[in-house]
Length: 390
Length: 247
Image (cartoon, rainbow over all chains, first blue to last red; front, top):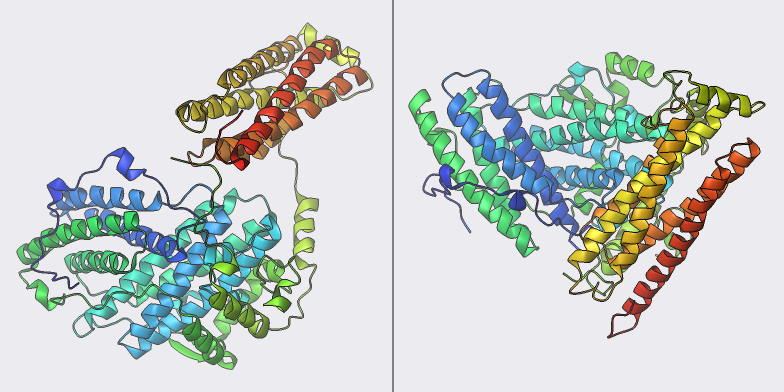
């Protein structure tokens, strides 16, 4: 299926309506649904959350756009609720965390391979190895605190192996800032990748900030605090690759197009027919939003949206296991560190970052404590015969 | 929709994706570096917090020291009366939550009256629900009679609430089966029985007159336990035997 961004009208805004029963409908099955259905749900929650976040900020900065922003934002809010409420209540917060990290790994790995800009592909690979390590730490937490196997969530698609050690990920804020793409010359896919991954990381930061204090185990509390801090760094990293010279309406236009692209990607790969129908419906809603913003862009900026957006969407984001790519990246790049916007060998890491984390870790590092000696095996580390049998 | 146990496409185990699982296990084995980290690091970090942490909270000081409390304090000479008040507060909270847990089960079973719950004696659950409410009211009187505050959440009441969170989630989930819910009620009743016995032991040890009143409640709780155990067993057996639903 090809989606034409300018000729497809989508669902008009006035017909984008919800009932509470639609918004709070049957969740997916944690046990029976495919892990990538949950991956898509979490990703799209993040995309919608970013739409809401941006549209609130934009409204506080633009008197002219307040009304259309309010209209679109209400629908985006209910779209987000519908999507997030698809997660069932039998997911423990750590199990949902495992799923969040699966999103970060699989989607970032897919994006890194399709990114046309080599520097930004490196940025994604750099972040990928950090989220990969979070998976390992949280899997140890799930095993050692709840006695559960992370693979019940991962369904064997995603590895549980150490990446760049979380203790080494804490950096001086200036070492988290990257070079941004150029709004005038960047490939549209580059922009969509940046908005997608920034949105996903932002929701992960917010999720950990919300659930961290709900834990009783002091190491769990500390681990969420530690990894939330890295997610904050990731939001800094991925936020900084977006060209800050884009106008407010240009950003809005790009984000609406990105929502179209993400729903389209989900729709193309979804295996659960009920959830696929939701992606299809919301794809049409987003096309409706895009039409509205396209008109606003023409009206206020006196520019042709075709300067910003492609006529048709790029190939959809593949939602599938990226195991081989992640392992290759791990082997080649685990020792990379950041020096300002550049990536350097471990020996060349700036003193400012080293000093920053020396102090943070001076009273112990939860990511080390929880995973000391941890080796993932099917059925948890208590299932000692499992790895020999595999 | 049918909620009873059946075979399906559960994807959580390694057997559902043997090739992927084999590769995942091989990777974990070969790519997880041997670590020199202290294997007791988790224990040490937790234990440091345990040593430094204060309690969940306290038993409230009575707003007014009335005669009744004075009498309690007199009777409890040589004992800590706050231990008794704490446990009374817990029982009150447990019974009050118990009312809501039974209501959740009753609500669900009524919805399933034409299917899985056909012929199920819901009135037996209603009877237990009413007993739990009566126990709550009795405890309220006892606590107030001692000059303590029955609306306060004591530390053990808080713990009972935290412990009940999982039970509540199972009962409230529209997808859980009757047997899964009855298992939760059985857990509730098992603990409830022992805790009433514990309260009686404590009351006797402290020379409190309430021990006799609590004995009546315990007797009812023993009946609840027997009822729920029977209903749960029947529900499981009905699922296991193909065809007829029995209770």
